[in-house]
Amino acid sequence: MVGRALPERTCVGCRSRAPTSELLRIVAVADEAGHSLRPDRLRRLPGRGANMHPDPACFALALRRRVFGRALRITGVIDHGALAEHVDASATTPGQPDRVRVASKVGRPT
Image (cartoon, rainbow, N blue to C red; front, side):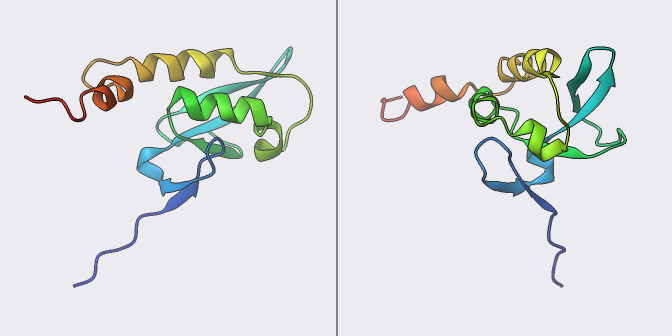
């Protein structure tokens, strides 16, 4: 029996393809100042979404390349404060390995 293929999306930061379970969906919510980016962990918010690894490096790449406006098809000023807090909080969540710490342990005797 052949298993079904998992849906894949492209990260707007690093441009690599990954299963949707590994990516964070981001939507733009209109407010009085323009648009603000919000994480959509349950993938249920209405509107166009962009996908990104919940990693500060991918978030920094996406901001530097200014991809959120193009990916979400919006113009004007985009507030990314709430998304930055979410990405920073998810990067330092206990229980998940810290990439820097894991990488520094490679090659050490146990």
